Length: 408
Image (cartoon, rainbow, N blue to C red; front, side, top):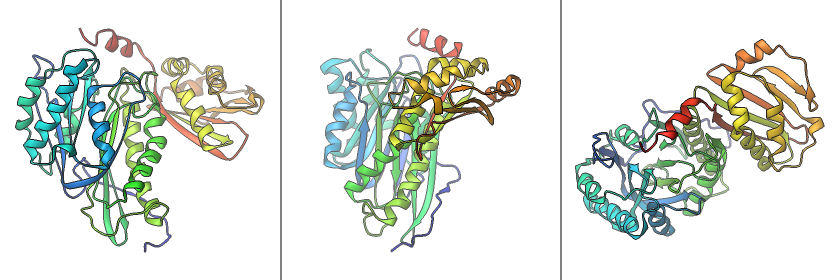
């Protein structure tokens, strides 16, 4: 039994999705977007069947790969996932569904695993016929290795400027446990799970019910608290693969061991979520909104999400305009019962509103704080003891340009 002392997850040097024991990954170029030779196919596999869970988009327009993976993950088991970038395989009809099945079965055959244990995901342009012939030809060129995580993270990028990778370790029951992940996401990002494609791997041995609960909790604390542009994707996928290679008894819900594992999983997902916000399309600044004094955790998170998603707040940050009324208006739009006459607002270290009204501040100092690489907004509702946090980015001309020319 692990003792009740606090266990702080430790960062892993040079993190990748293959940091946990027993995982391999790799990538190849299949020319998914005709005429390109960038890495656009990624494969992550475990050395054995895993306890697995996944969370998918809530958009009613659903990509073919989500339909396939959603059905396969019902068993609570998986051993790998194959992902392409450049084409979302969404709004592609029956041909797209057959292509997703073929993509998964080809990857499973290539790795010599049960086809039912191979998940599949796609990201890219919506409504374009899927080039399954190029993808099927490209999969055998992937040679997964224990050092291939970085290539896989690059292969799933679309408008992302940087790959997103994270890993943490903790000690549970005298064993070193590693949790790692990769993610892609830059546009079509909003809190409506999953708002991205992300693969989380761990060598921990997890009880299936605990894996489901842990992933939901981590998603609610991280990816569901990110917004770039209020848009979601038909292909949003967050998958957890736990191969148990670290050994030990399965971690059960409600135990000290579960809390320690949750801390590591949360840390990985939050770091990936912050990377997504920082890399928002056209963004120049990361924004973090902290809400205090909420009546419940759910209320605190909801208010934080609403502020971070406000285009008026985002453009004010971009222009370094200390227009705090936009923040208070967003708080009021969150659908959470509040008393506006009790709300305090801070930008950086400067208080700009007290009890819902103007508080004297130095506009020059606040404007400078809004020009920092990371801008902090703090809202105190003064109604309770709960809090919430969300991340986003400023809204710039660059976002308009990227999305005005996305297919041209």
